[in-house]
Amino acid sequence: MAPKIKHRARIKLINQNGTVVGNRVDDSTYLDSYGAYLRIPVPKIIGKTVTYTVAVEYLGEHQYKQTLAQRTRAHERNQERTKKWKEEQAKQELENQEKQLIQRRNRIMNQIELAFVKNGKEAVNFVTCDKCDATATFLGLAFENPGSTVIDPDQITGAWCKEHDNKYARPFKTKAAIACELLEFFYDGLRQIYVSPSGVSPQ
Image (cartoon, rainbow, N blue to C red; front, side):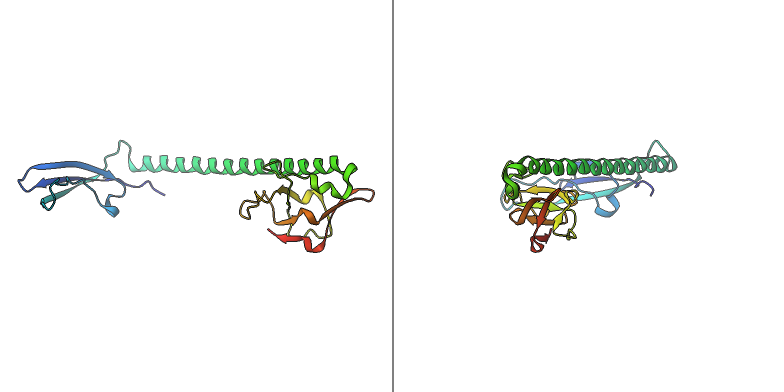
């Protein structure tokens, strides 16, 4: 896409005595579509009307130091750099989100591991919110349907308390939320996280 062309116009404001009280040049890419503007003095006497004449003279296109072809190439290079920068930013943001997801998951599983031996099924009470130290009321999952009543720790996306429960700002990759009160932990050769079939609700 070629760069936009700037248009130039001189706007004069002339009072009823023929005196030019305003004179400016408007140089804009939007001159042909939005027009020009000029500030007009306002009389300080109530009821007094002052008549002005506005004279608009088109001065042609803005005279650039570079040719249109040169400006087009520079514009395309800038667009390409912007596109590349946005792609890199999006990639970096995705990597950061993935790292934070793993950190949240590890934090939750560490809390469960530390509490499991002493508290068994009540270990869920030791899971805290990702944003504060309050006990979590919901556990986030990466799938709306876990596929079984036993949750794979890799499905966990985060945990949050009632205060930080925002449907539109759930942790990265969260597709479902489970009320922590419906979770149980048991040991069957491996430590398992169990949830009743009715405990999973879409995000």
